[in-house]
Length: 251
Image (cartoon, rainbow, N blue to C red; front, side):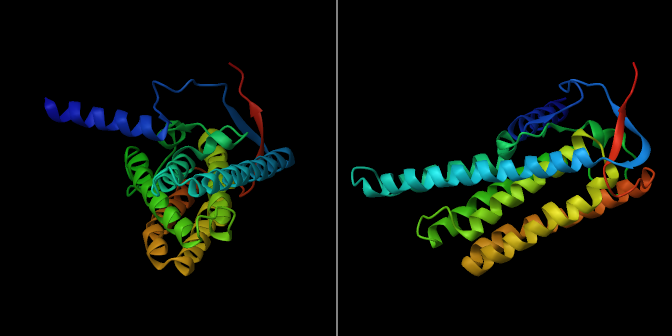
């Protein structure tokens, strides 16, 4: 009797931390389907603009944090570890809830994953938020190490590329999880979250080898995720690899 309760508590805790909405929590909206093979140019523009704006906002956050840390470091009355603590909290916010800086709908939900046809080897839904919690912790550790290596500077190439990586991941989530564009999700996950993760890990490695090794696990997981997205696309009709115009379904 205790085991199911513990499992349920663990799932609730993980979903709460990562902001994942289950079927009971998700407010089901009017769904849409693709009735033509026509390219949705408007969607591409929205994704592009939304991603760019999110990157700009997060860079401004880094700028503000850099100014704040400079003030803290120059204040001799504050302990030396205080700026490190604030920096860790910032990277934790970015790693777990970067979507708060996005204008796109980045709702984390299991709805799409639960409804599509998946390969036999696909992980159960609970695995994803648990793994992302681990990756978030590794992102915080590696980013703090890079920040320390860069003399407490935030507006440096490794950290700017890091927020670009986060924004690309959020946009992919909009495409796959929210809008269920299984075709468009394939090239986006490869050219967005996966490729940017490889680039960020390489840059982190050059800056601080320990940081690069710490972050490398995210590349392994995103490789698995990219293959899974590709197989889901194959198993669910292999629609064109670009966003199709969607037509709302009548109730």
